[in-house]
Image (tube, rainbow, N blue to C red; front, side, top):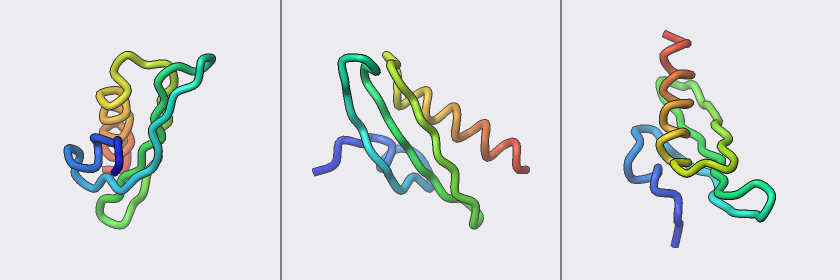
Length: 65
């Protein structure tokens, strides 16, 4: 079972890891690949880690266009 909701909701998402620690709060390391380009997004202590990761990945892919 995988808890990373991006895998089913973000085009090109292919990993990586969700987590939680007392100091960093809810965490997500997310990766996605589009048109041969792979990007990583790291989100720490976010009440909306999936939304924040999507925005970071969208920004990264848009920056490459």
